[in-house]
Image (cartoon, rainbow, N blue to C red):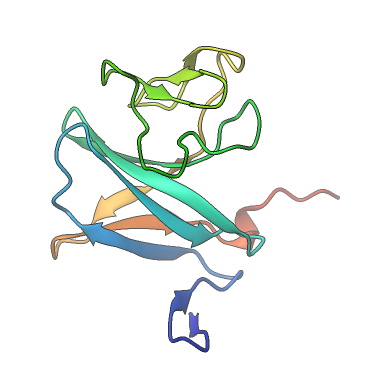
Length: 137
């Protein structure tokens, strides 16, 4: 890993990286948005959710169209706090799996990211390397 001019950590394309996304104090049913660089180096949004006692993390991008689920406000759940909601086209997703259960992308899945507690009270999300990109040859 290298640091940029501002001293911020950034992921090099050759290595997977664990990104610290904050304290492991996320209450049940709450989300925490974060930003990372994808394997192509593009800034990408993601979010962590504690759901039924389990931490899950997803790329904040609807499989229907490449738009974020929220409007940048970190509000990912529907009005009943039961499902993840794409605010652009109304698609609904199971929080535990990211599967679309209603809407224009029925049956598709949100892109899941691995999340873990680092044992020191911090949450970390695994950011894939460029080696995880499909080979187009």
